[in-house]
Length: 489
Image 1: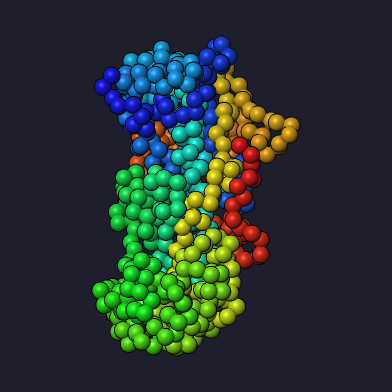
Image 2: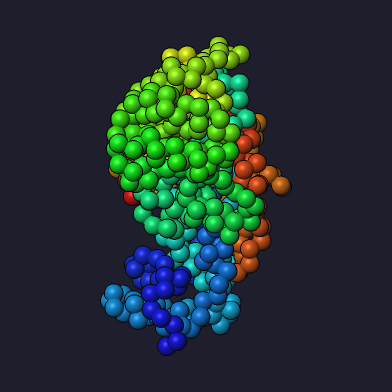
């Protein structure tokens, strides 16, 4: 066999082991199986959909080969599970190795209420009805994760937008306020890539290079992200405590004139760094830097530390009162906060800044694990379920309705997504008027039918939506971190 085992690119093995035992368990006469993906629930009313095109380009545009089948048969035998060799050989011989399925999806970047169909899949060849559900594991994972990250990022954006509109004269900085610092805290580079690109739909600031690469590879993005020079504790502590000021002075010297530089400032004593180093010893260098210097704490309570840092900088550099009546630092100095942030702490940070009369544009932010890692499939209750089957020439409803958990009741029939009187709704496909169904056919039999650009995702995500979509993050005191056990698997 020519291929090396375990390259992780064999779609036949990118599934749960037990899926290999399903091909012969359907009713006799089964011709088609139609399944759908939705968020069944969670702490937020709406979500931002993204991910299906990345999955298609990564996994469905490369044909399966005899080598893939041979490898899969070896592995399934090792797992002591049956293998449908005849079926997979048929896909290679009948369809050139491409999955005979059709995928419909909501236009990516759309923000819509949860509990609506996002993706619908059906086989296109009645010989391979089992193919629809076979790759559920890989497809569902490619939807729930980036959509959950994009939703977290989008909700943060709405919170920041509201704060800027209320307290700042510069709402135009919105896409630059929140930076992705999550690459080191996420489970894999693939997660960093998918989560990172999801964040870039909402903000252009990132330190997750994989996300920028993925946005370009999968969505044809042009210049999707920017960043700026940042010091880290190592580049400060390597100078020794007695020379901390020299470390910060070197940062300002090396990157003089750059639009932004970020100085981590609490390797030893944040208050001392703010007041004595930046506010006294290096004050002239900060003022004459030619860009904006961001003083960044990296420990302590993020709510109080952020506001205290702004107040400390104001004490040394002064402030002006803007048109909204809030104090704002001179343009050349700002605070930055990126330690352990979540939607909940972001809400409280802006509430505390407001309470103290400090404009929101005094602070730039970074988020890591709270963006890319503090979620799982159950955070928004994602699931893929069969909803219809064509058996002996007749379509029949397929559904689950467990007595013990009404939230896990699934939808029935072939589905459509419509928008009537401004409200989204999932209905039966036959009930949708011509041209009303918002689901678009994006893939069929090995072909990508719609190639969405990253700019399209951004444009859709920024369309006006009801405030109710993001009301939970506007500061009513309700915890906003996604619950990991909202809907059991």
